[in-house]
Each structure stands twice: as structure tokens, then as C-alpha cells.
Length: 261
Image (tube, rainbow, N blue to C red):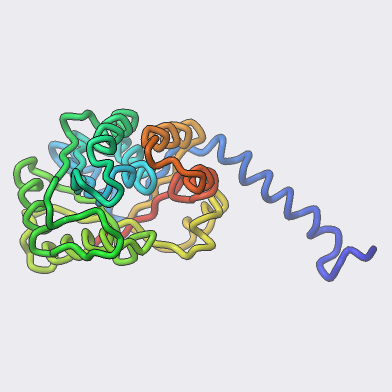
């Protein structure tokens, strides 16, 4: 049989390239490629006081683990998490999910004392509900001011998965930023939403992420990726079959690229 229009060289080159990428990943160090962003954060007197704002328990492991672990390499003096969860939530598992969240955060280096869960009836865990921007912004700003936060991390306008609750968080932070309500010097990084193709090619997205512009790029080592997966497994109530596939193939378990607002 003929080798096809690319010839046998290309047939051999593809598996060789894959082997190099997967083999090379074992030796990757955590990287921060951020233009002025990482230099600015590294140079801050008193260190980085970071706040991760998520919509649901498991967001921190499913989407933001590379950022949480990567920030530990910067001048980090505090890492806190603000999560919105209604006890009578969409799947009626509020208390269970809160405990799972604390276990996951502990594995990612965030102690339970630094985890705040907002339980408000007007902020339901429902993919069809857009949360009130003013209400969200008030909760976030109060937490920022109470903890002297100088870096906030959350979703971008695409919400990674298009979830309305994720997008609501971006809208609230964009409002605080555009209206100049954030404390002076407080920066906001939003997690880049990528195409469905890039989302599920795991470490094969590393060269693409390198080539495309971003303000911060975090790539986990193999050991750190296993740490992120252990954190994800803490969310036992949510570990349906497709989440196991997600952990294997999603680039968000290994790579986070972010942009400054």
C-alpha cells in the first residue's frame, strides 16, 4: 500500500513528535511567561495576596489548579478562595460539596481557614441563571478589602465552559475594574477560554500556548499534574464518568493561560 501524499517520513514523524512532547512533559518545570504581569507580581513589596473567585466547588481543581500551584512560585504571601454555593443547590448536595472543596483546596495548598463559601439564595448553582452583577461585585469587593488582596483570578467572558455562573463572575470583576472600584494596585487576571479542540488535547497544547500571547502562562510538571488530579478526585460527588475523561485530556489540568483586565 502506498504511504500516502505525505510519504513515510511524515508517518514516522507524528509518533516521534508525540513521544517528544509526552516525554518532555516529565521534565517541564513550572513556568510563568507573563510579560510585565509576573515581573510586577514578583516585585511587589509584602508579596502577592491572591484571591481566586470561583462559581462552584471543583472549579478550583478542574480549571485553576495550574494557576494556584504556579502562583506559589511567585512572591506569594496569601492565597484565598471565594466560592459561591447555595446549600440547596442545583444538585441538592451543598454541604457535601463544601467539605469536598476544603479537602481539594488543602491539597492545592489553600488551608480551610482561607476558603470562604458564600451561601445566598439569589446566587443559585444553576447553569441557566445569570447572577446579579451588583450583588456579586459587593461580595467580591468586601472580600478584597478585608484581606488586602492585590491579585484577583477568575474566569473570562467565555467562562471556559460557557457556564452562565462562570460568566457572571467575569462580569462582576469587569464592572469593579471598569468603574475603578478596586483598591489601588489590585490586578485582575482572567482565565483564557480556548476552542474545544485545544481544550481536550492536554499537553499537546503547550506549544500553541507558548506561541499565542498571554499575560501569564502556568504549565505544571508531571508531579504537579498528579497533585491537581488528586485535588479533583476529592470532589467525589461530582466524579461522573465524563469527569474522569476530562482529567485525562483537558489542558486545564496542566495549562492555564491568563490575561489582565
